[in-house]
Image (cartoon, rainbow, N blue to C red; front, side, top):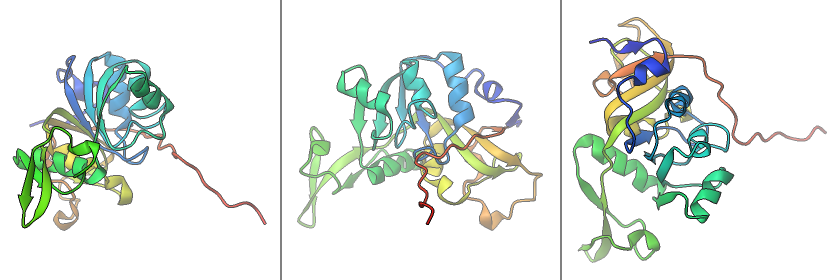
Length: 232
């Protein structure tokens, strides 16, 4: 089975359709599938529901899909670094389903593991719990959260082999593994594709069985908030 494609556009060929749900890895601008996001923008696919921790910044990451009005709903934890995200939400142009970060990660992981839902204490007594089933276990109240199963997962890794085994680099791993597993189809972009047998099996973070298509490319890797010390 061929998994390696020549470009992000080729890797997404035949997978995109209006109204689809996409799970995207990354945290802020760290470990985001920037090439695949740009290819989705160029494809013009619209009315998207996107599950991701946030939406990047105004002109990079998932923020570019907000600029082009291709997203109708975000399932996210944080909106603070993206002024357009905040503007669209507050003006009623964008639907937003807020999730605590751990809940969002577990919803993705559960979807990939075939678990339809789970109970958690996080959010009990807040607006997060409104409309959700409540249940008591050992005298404690929990709410039911449903798993996320997306039409497509897009993730970013450091290295891969042609079978799709992935290795992430440090904190760039973040939401990528659970996002990858919860998609019916997973497309991964990587910095380097190495020959089969190069990766130590004990060092593989995501087995290739979850990855259907791969593309290697060059990445801009912007810094979301650059903080430096003043010179003495």
